[in-house]
Length: 118
Image 1 (tube, one colour):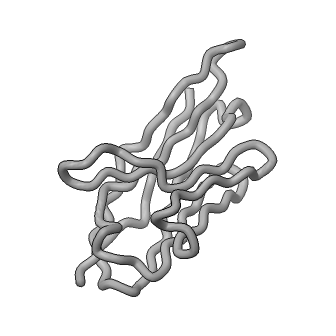
Image 2 (cartoon, one colour):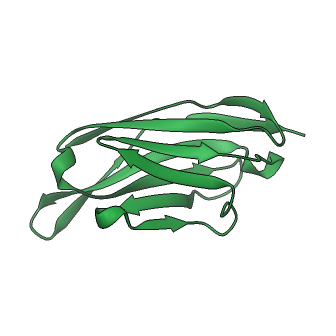
C-alpha cells in the first residue's frame, strides 16, 4: 500500500501563490504515476497535473502556465501561481502503484482546501 498525505492549502487572494505538498510513504518504489486532482463544489473531480516515470508531466489546460508539478524523492509538489477564484476547490493527491503484476492500486489523500477570493 501507499500512504498519501497532503498539506499546504489555505485562503489567498486572486493573483497570489500557494504550494501544495504531498508526502508519499509505503510501497513508493512501485508507484507508476502520481499527481494532483481537484474537486470544486457541485463539480466532478478533475485532473490538475501528474508526473510519471521518467518525470513525464501532464498539466490541465486550465492551469497550464500557472501551475507546476515537481517531485523530490517521495514528495510531490504543486506550485500554484497567479491563482484565480475558479481554482477554488479541494485538492487531492493521488498515487497509482503496482499492487501485483497487471493490477494498479489507486491511493488518495484526504484532500486540502484551496480558496481563492476575488
